[in-house]
Image (cartoon, rainbow, N blue to C red):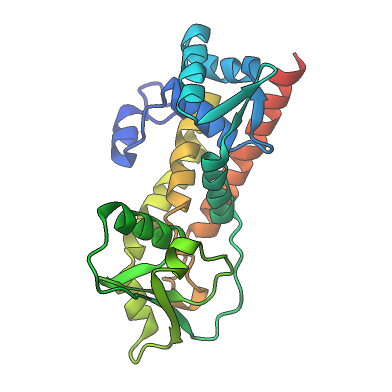
Length: 257
């Protein structure tokens, strides 16, 4: 807490949470990723940058560079996410409102089908896809998770893996705790929830909310039966949803000025 006891994250709290300083690029991306549809006029993005003391010229330079890097597309004075980042937005949306189904005790298991040494880029793409599907690696080439999520498997995993369904012989809760750092995830989720409660300026709330959304992407979304008591996932989602409502209202104000 600051010396004047204001409710903003101080340097020690930011360091403990490893909050990333928001650059002009990250502010633009976070704003568009949190907005539906992900298209905004330049003036709205400039106004958001001003909340962080970032000059209009700096924001506009960032916008030009992001268009050149194929992060954004520009038309008629507005900027929108490109296809690659639309996929990222979809993953973020799913992390906030996951499509789950009742769990009957089954686990989905993926085994890498080829014994040949695969190119590094191919291995990286597979690992990224498995992480997006929220599977954990039991050992090299073997991935699994409880079968409680409804989502489409991309071609990169259906082409390279054999998919099975099974149940563990031992305690499934112990297996889940082995595969995911549930204690660590819960500890950080509670700290981010608390930081959002204390942050009282748009800039501070934006900074903490961006970290909260990144953390939700790492939630394994396990069935309640496998989670420790008082799991903070729902609470963090609720706090982020409150921030998102604030962001929509803020952007609406900028769009009507």
